Image (cartoon, rainbow, N blue to C red):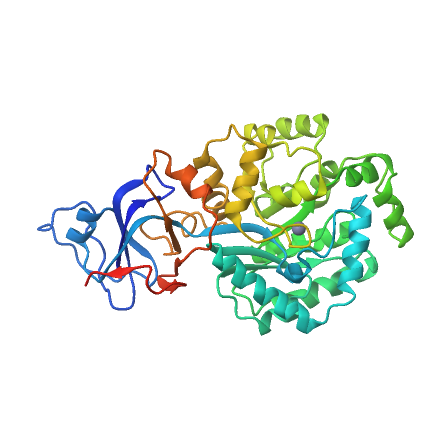
Length: 435
Ligand SMILES: [Zn+2]
């Protein structure tokens, strides 16, 4: 199949006007001749189904590839978006929890809501979340679930990295058991990882076990870190609402009163596992933390969730400083218990409001190439390049000077999605078949 649009935004060089992408499917069994002239025939070999086999100007693509042509017209074709941090478990909590006085109060409020939910509710919540994410053009999601036992019952409609969210704050002697139980269920997932929840809910022992397993099985880790001022206050000063709340439920507080969350985290997770770890938030970073990071040369993947960040009124996300240090910055929606929908377009707009000086192209990277790198899929996802998976979306494009700005401004549902080379059209009349 050859898909033609007004502009192809590859995220791999300048956008291509009157561009096209050739995608392998079961019927096409040839590899592109690339830039070679037609007489320089190459032995044919089959391209894996559902991958991009060629991308360029429409004329070039049709001259060297066969197949049905789908002309989507005045549209921009771009890689499907990647949500680097989400909890679909709580899709059903949209609008249920108003902003609270403290972060600790918010935890109490979500716990009250969760007490009313059954496994059936969570299944409906996760399935509803997948459908919504896909409607907004998300083709890959890093989803944390507190209920890994539900994974075998779910058929995810988009590419999913399942992370089991692990908490042992009420049972620190059962860390091993908790991890083992989660892994049993995770095995049914194609892509999985572990998510020790946060330093205040997961013990050092739990983190260490997760790191051990991640190293042994070469899987990803993700965790929440340095999200709120209360987390900083708890670890650094041994005081504040979060400190009091957790002390009240019996958490041993002997790690509080000296280090920053980042300082503790680096100790718990160790350097070797850092490339495998995707860190959510990182709003609270002291100057001494930055000095430490700069001196050590440590870098990791960070997910910022602009709208959830606004909801909680967290400290300003230190984007510029992290960028200077070479951190890989991605965007995520977090859960709908602190956000209104699962649109990454809206997340990009919220990011632009916070950081208006960042070029739109760089913002789009935060939901394409950057999260692909965090998931260690830089050669498969997040860009339109020969050999990458054909996960593509198409949105209207009027041909303004800045196609990236126009993409970010897009506020509708996405009509046309290609997932692993297969069309998932919401509106069957959106595309015109030429032959
Ligand atoms: Zn989260």
